[in-house]
Image 1 (cartoon, rainbow, N blue to C red):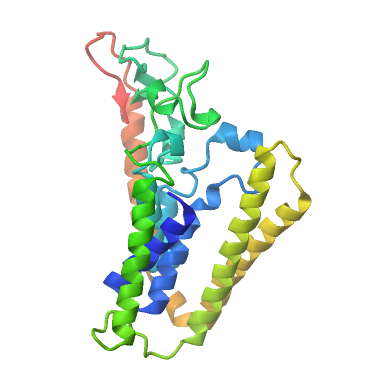
Image 2: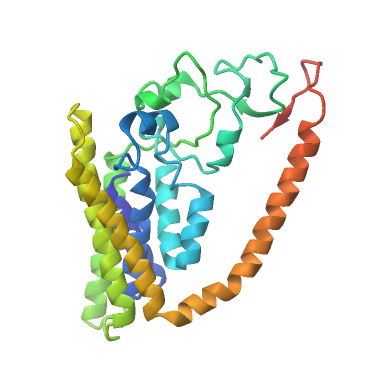
Length: 307
């Protein structure tokens, strides 16, 4: 989905379910965050292509959970972004929800034609099937099938970015948001709270963070389009990128300093979250170790461990 669609979808979610301007902005900013994994200065073009980080590095459940810990509304907005992207076809890369864990598995049981492949004794854990060429033939080169096949790591949908579904979500989100604001301003129905005074300790970091996100995408898009035309990357755009990331980090730190009660509340929950994550990781490692220690099946009708 296009960037404005993601942002407006996050804003309309905030208007419909929460009715607070600050929450609407938080969801809008959160909906922009996952696209920070585009080819924006932090990776070379070759490395970006080889690692396939877009729609993976910042679109997965692990990253979304980390954003949610920073702020629940940012996390909800980020999740809405990945959810919309998961509805797009392989041309737009879909979404790799389980990154980076899916990168730990390098083999599939079946090829893209559905034929069972020989099992490799060096690999005990497999994905079910390799990518289908018919799905990826129109996508970017790094996802297209080549000499080395790839396991099917991503989820795809029927929608195309910039087409009817994308445009419909954007126009519909703008229309609904405007209607709710107009009805609230005219006093017909209080959908959006327009009377509560601005909370400066909340608003100042929010504005700085939003500016950082905007600068990041503007500079990144210019840099990306230049690289697509085989121009050499300019240092100015790399500096702009790191400056924008610095603004975002500064906004987060400032928000913590100006709103210590939120930091204390979140910090009090971290030990429980860490304990739960450690328990899940430990159980998963033990199960994988036990299952992967078993010999590969010699009967072609039986399957190895599939994740």
